[in-house]
Length: 345
Image (cartoon, rainbow, N blue to C red; front, side, top):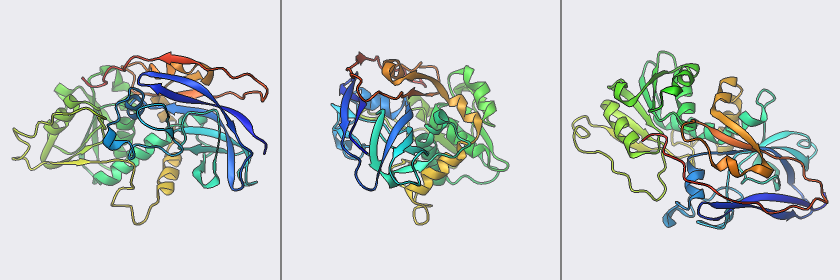
């Protein structure tokens, strides 16, 4: 296939981004050319990256597949692209696929870097696959048991996905804890109870923390029962977070454990690859309840609003990409975005 024009979203300075033109060379053997249909923007990690809050010690660890540039900027970042294979191996041409690729309307990658999207999963929902993969890994790390009392603190996308998976275990009682009472109907749709922090049930067997705030972590430690585990899913970037490890932390013999999606959880690492984990995430997204986690969409040409997600919405936004005529003149769009308000004060 001949060379083609493409546009990608670049962070050119902390809090400022633009669309930049690129030229894709003739397609190499073994690669696929993908036209993006939807690309999700997560308010967690991507917000920290956008605002230049990746600490230097984590520059290498936080690189995403197919990233260009380097932290803090200029950098092309993102990891939730759903697209249509335009060229490549015959078995994939015309297929909808998911790829951990930065925000770009057309791109070339090795064929083994894409996974087919199940027919039952629409484009926008499929863009949640990276978040679902994080939730799956968290459940593998946490290893909840039948009948467990589980609290999930922080009703953002990852928190909601983790809560929904935990709620499917027989006999579990899952309580989604968040400061925003408007998220109660969402919790119910996911099969969970809802409680604000001051009314949440204590003595949990397992607490999953996903609020991204120090207050949320304090709540998570408070809710944990004797010898319970608090699984930390939040990444705070360059922020120093005070964890209340005094008071009852030692007397209740609590375990505070990190979970991160970069590696398959130890409990499954010998028998599951990253690709298998991602395929499972796409399969689980067949449930239409997860459409509730999408806050809206914007055309890729108008992607600036995508980085201004409402601070009270527990959602991932996504940008729809459109076909660009080969002869079209592609301009550069610059914009600034204010820092999102924390979802769990």
